[in-house]
Image (cartoon, rainbow, N blue to C red; front, side):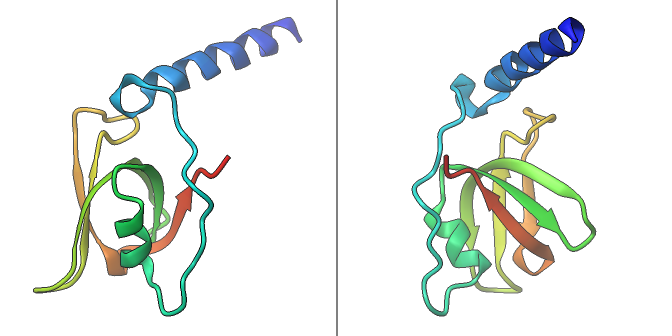
Length: 105
C-alpha cells in the first residue's frame, strides 16, 4: 500500500512538471456549448488552453490549442506542446475529431 501511495505522489509530481509552459494545469472556465456551435468553434474559444482531442481512430492527443483555421480545404486545429512529446506540434483536421475533453475543475 505504501508503494502505491508513493507511486501516486510521484505521478502527480510528474504531471505538474509536464504541464504546458512549465506551469501547473489550470482549469478552463465552465464548458458551455452555444447553439449551433461545432468542434471548431469550441476549440477557437479555448485557444491557449490545454485540451485532449479524441480522434475517430480512437487516438488521443493532448496539448495546447494554438490556432484554429477554418476555410480552404477544411478546418484544422494547431496543437502545441503535445503531452508526452513536448517538442512536437500537431495539425489535426477537425472532421477527424470525435470529442474534445477540457479540464474545468
